[in-house]
Length: 318
Image (cartoon, rainbow, N blue to C red; front, side, top):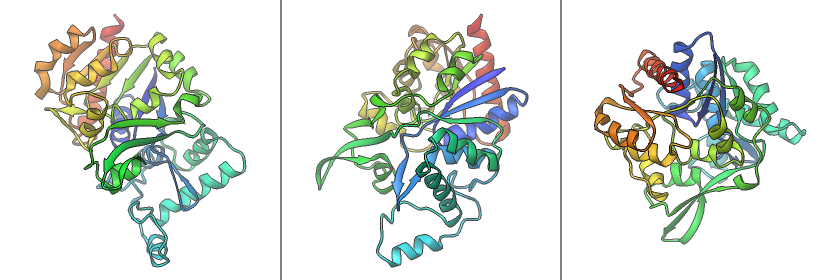
């Protein structure tokens, strides 16, 4: 079976680990969010792509969910000694190597999709990882604080400001002029099932959907599209998704996120058993919904979630 997954960073990567365990013989293509990408110290950093690559390739810092295992921080400390910033975004020594290789290859004229394939040749993640676009797209957040009303890069909003300032708007800068990377639309068209993991629906999956052609391809695909709620019991499972959901006028509830995606995009939706009361509202919106445990406590629990999503896809396929 050909499975396509739209994925952000930590949540998407951990879901993919469970999906691989649940469907070991299937062909999995991951369309990764690049809206979190940022240029630091002259280097192109792709946090979500790298988190998927490291997690599935066995190199992730398990407790953090991002960055490399057994990391050291000598370069960061030396940069700080020189007074070079930003000091709020941590790049470890091992991680720096990935960004150096990526930046060199991009400078040599290779597109991001080819660079990602080359990096994955080392890590062997067991999936085909494709960036959503080879074009530059960066998510910015409109805020108002002591410095006035301004737009900041999503990483600054998330990491430096800890999403403590109210987000007034989410802006996927460059998305409207971007094109899907080679293989993205083809993978969707040829898929047997498409999954939205419990990634951030606004700045992860939402940014992928903002690339022209992607949403339409999903809406027109023969494959059922099934999502898993990132909201459990009225709160994000991890991170601060409620802050960016509020910025686009969406409540932090399992059924509100399903309606945000809409029946034109979703065929099926899984909510946690804690939100079983939301099933009726989702189905009234025209989306088949089931309640199952959705906490990714370990690989076995996550694999069970993935199997439930695949089973729901078969159910809506009829």
